Amino acid sequence: MAAVKPKGSQWSSENTNARVWLYSALLTLQYGAQPLISKCFIGKEVIVTSSVLMCEIAKVICALIVMAKDGSLEKVYNEWTLVGALTASGLPAAIYALQNSLLQISYKNLDSLTFSILNQTKIIFTALFTYLILRQKQSIQQIGALFLLIVAAVLLSIGEGSRKGSRSGSSDQILFYGIIPVLVASLLSGLASALCQWASQVKKHSSYLMTVEMSFVGSLCLLISTSKSPDGEAIRRHGFLYGWTPLTLIPVLSNAFGGILVGLVTSHAGGVRKGFVIVSALIATALLQFVFEGKPPSFFCLVALPLVLCSISIYQKYPYQVKKKES
Image (cartoon, rainbow, N blue to C red; front, side, top):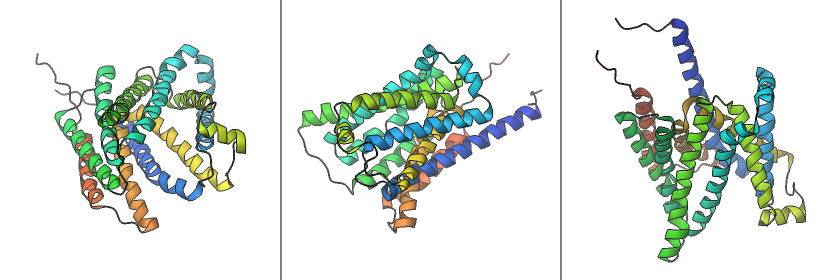
């Protein structure tokens, strides 16, 4: 006779699943709306580094407030160690910093379409590294759903790339300074996402604490870069808050809220689910542009929409099942 799951356990599982869907929906909306919010409230004079650093500070404050409210702050403070922080958050933060640098190099040497398409390979690398590090297998149906998601991402990239001009360059320059950096960046993105999932699910590292630690490491890397970057020169010349208005805080806080949600989604659902959120957010952006700016979605966006919905449904409906050995 098959064992019956306790009602309490079943309720807890359903509650967690509902929470994951809520976090994913909120993150999709935040990702989708962020470009429009930034466009409306961040002036061209605002120094990018200043807005990024303020966002990291806001993430730390929000995470600390949540931990203080749920009573975990004191426990985290007593159990925190430098080695644990570097293992759980330091390595992923350093990897993400390297990834961002590679993406900047690649974007300067590739046309927008090629860059966007190659950048979607991070979905594959995320699934690969979650298997290698966490032994999290995918069912045949889930692999098919990931393929549909990648097709949708490529279609969305084509729709976006067709509106932008292409860059010309020698074949060696395109290969070594364009294609290879974006592929390495995608690989690093998958690795960092899997490491974050490992830290939260295996090491039971609080997602809020990881947000604080990764924000600190990321901010430190950014501050070091200002010693020679154009943004650093602009800050020294005009001041840190040059071009800011009270409304500039809106996209900064929105982005910080998204950073908190990324940690929650990765912790509860994994990096692969985050890939679904990112692609879904591209469609959300197109729909929001149509609502608020009257800019209709492209044909490719309309084709990608049912593919994304199908891929999410299939991935959720057909999880990997461990085969029981017959006695």
